[in-house]
Length: 379
View 1 (cartoon, rainbow, N blue to C red):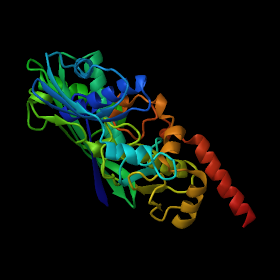
View 2: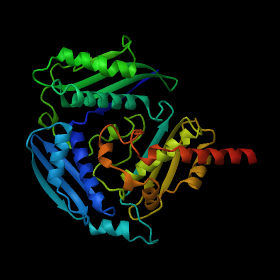
View 3: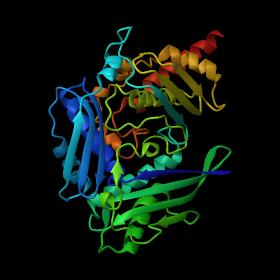
View 4: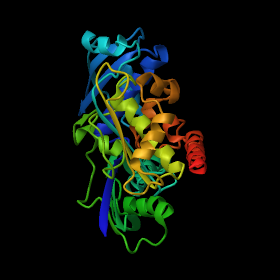
């Protein structure tokens, strides 16, 4: 037996505030200029927001106004001071992306990216991170619709699940730290979380689960007043909750020429299609790039012994049906339709609630399954 733990954070967590601001700026730029180059970071502390990075675009957007609107939508009503320091993308990087030897769009950075899928949940995601996200989402929703007088915007939760023989067996521990209003009753807040979030999600009998809600007591000072925030500090929350590997880069605030974002989505697309096609129960895809080069340096697959074919055979199948070049990733995953700000809370993977192509793999899975059946029939 082993215990696997994953964490999620609420939309008002200071790091997630920064992710949402960075991606809201990206969305605003892309609405006017799909070919923009964007790498925007955000930092926040108390009532100070700092927006900095590199942007090359013909779009005209008001960074400060976007940041203030995001904070207001999350639930922060204070007046914020916003500082901006934005320059253009380095011409050396731009040359590598735009002017490759083979006249294809090159990768916007070097590095390795991972995608993962498993059959533990309907979304083909690890169970601990999906449950953690649902708790975060549930409390956020209750705060906005019913209990704004009880809960503040900040918070986080942690879910630990016992596994036996590689499969989830039972919930072990659930920890929720939710910001509450100064005048709110902590016991009432606990009752709301248990009765209106945990029981509908997990089941009415929670007796065998160690449940800790605000274990240190009062959590009143939260958000950027309790802790500073920075874009890209919750990358494990963004992907698989520590259950599977994460590559070298964060996502938010980056346009899709940056393969640490786009190729991570595509690797998830590949892994999920293989599991959806029932060619493996668990699948990890790793892809690595060199800046300015369109084709990846390497692609590898690990099914942890669960594949219907060997990992090498599945890799051959993947290479026949998937194109890892940045230009194809952009086209196949239809990034022009994506609103990235929505991904900056509750994870970028497993988001079947959003119209993101890397999660909707039915057609690709059918294609893979057909190729497998044809190969098996001719063997």
